[in-house]
Amino acid sequence: MIRMGKKKIMVLGAGLAGLSAAWHLQKNGVDCSVFEKEPSAGGLCRSRRINGFTFDCDGHLLHFRNKYSHRLISELLGSGLVPHRRSAWISSFGSFIRYPFQANLNALPEKLAEECLVEFLKASLSGSREDKSNLLKWINGAFGTGIARHFMVPYNEKFWTVPLCRMSADWTVNFVPRPEPLEVIAGFFGAGRRRFGYNTTFWYPRLAGIDQLPLAFERRLRNVFKNSPVESIDLKKKILHVAGIGEVGFDILISTMPLPELPKITRPLPASIRGMFGKLRWNSIFNLNLGVEGIIQNGRHWIYFPQKETAFFRIGFFHNFSGDACPAGKSSIYAEVAHSSVRPFEKRKIVRKIIGGLKDCGILGPDNAISVMDENDIKYGYPIYDRDYPRAISTIN
Image (cartoon, rainbow, N blue to C red; front, side):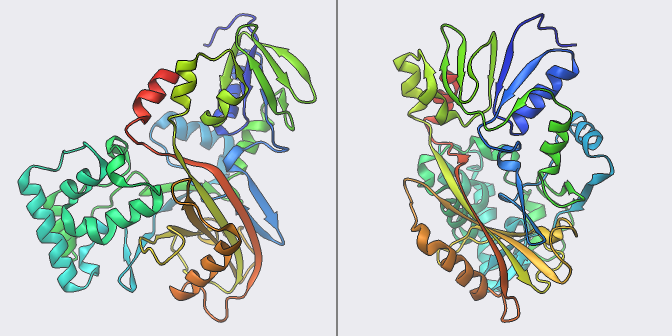
């Protein structure tokens, strides 16, 4: 049981984190209010419905690392939560190979597969697999120069947008599959059976749209104020100024807004802390959703693209997450392009580049006319885990 007495608790942001915080508080009899600047709840887990297509604002799937989360969301969505066995692929040397690259070398051209295996075994025998001084060294040490050169380095450079030698490798523990030497050898001979990664099974709402989850939270909550951006936070007086509402006092404040936005509205803030906010870096994700004629890539969930000449780093297929995602006989695609202050892009040209890339790699054919387009440019995509990140986050917290 959570006991907060009569304290006034305010939550900033009605994304999943803010909604979940409010739900747990109110479920335990604690009063709280949520302020959201957008006209709808959900944060980055919002969905849009256009001419029979349902588009998420980017690809969002559900993975559960503990039984509590799975049970909670199953209760919220009931029979509307559907499990999927992952079908993820990589565009490589003119064909698609199964993810992860390092465990499916048999799909590569023979000489490249041999190079990747030999260099992987050399790295394994050298004892350099645990060098985490930076991401580039870790990739080469963990997988060898062949796998690094043909997939790991180009894909990660494309995704993170910064030199990998400036990044930490600590984040890789839960996200990058590391097969053992015997498993890589089995993959080389096409005999690998193990499924790798945290998302071998994922869940998605039966009725299309990841927004089914935040909407389920919101239906069970009181005091969710939308179209209500917080314009300032006075930490000393413990007062929020909320547009359209005015001054709101608080005893406890839960902020789920993007961290780099917090110092813009917070006073007083010590110079040392403000300096730590200034060290935070992130990439941004331009997401293009397309509704197209015909059924494409039936059964596949997403494909990774490490090639520099292709604008997007990943594409996915909403119609393979839910049969409700688009009208019968049509398909629904999302394509993601990473950019940042280090590697900007020309927004007016990017849609044409994405569509051209989809045609060049055979995803879109002459019969796949585009009937709907939906663009989202997500400013705060992923935090960049550079050398400053651990100290900055620790100090801010």
